[in-house]
Image 1 (spheres, helix red, strand yellow):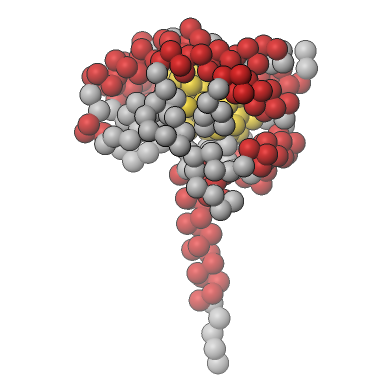
Image 2 (cartoon, one colour):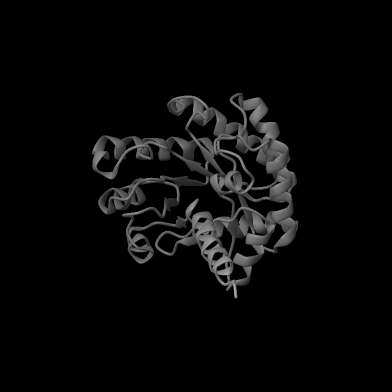
Length: 260
């Protein structure tokens, strides 16, 4: 078994219901090394942070070749499983998507986040269309003999406020989790979901390990574990935290000069 395959299998095993994998998202090789030094079990990029750190807007505006080169540098910098936030895969067409996945696998990455929002357009892919896209990813993964962890992200509630989340949204999340599992997904990511009751019900009903994003109002990590969450991500919050600390230190440095 190759080291690449071993890391892929390890990454999947880290998703344990009730004992969640903590993903403090990174954006380059430097942050990957930093998070490895404090005991991370795996590293994963956040597309928003990668874009912001390099002068782009999120939403597949970072050139694909840069995305590939960046994840390659990250893989080469740490001896940990690496997952890429691949947004919509930089392709609408399943065949083209499959070719992009082969390129990502060749970097040594073992997982991707893959969203059902139609990047650059309004709305989400239908369940049928997104399942076809997931099947194309799994086919490419199988052809490369690497069990790529497909973290299927669904943006059902992300644009809405918590007060707008309803039982019908939860029903659709569960429906998509079941369908994505049948299509070959490995995990289910529901960013924006913060209602403890809804999170618990999703974790109970989903055939896939559930990933929740840390945003204002979300239950604590301990509470999320108790609800059955298997992965907790920090998303773009890590970049904002780093930039706030950087600006504070810079401000202190600039204010430290005393003119005599």
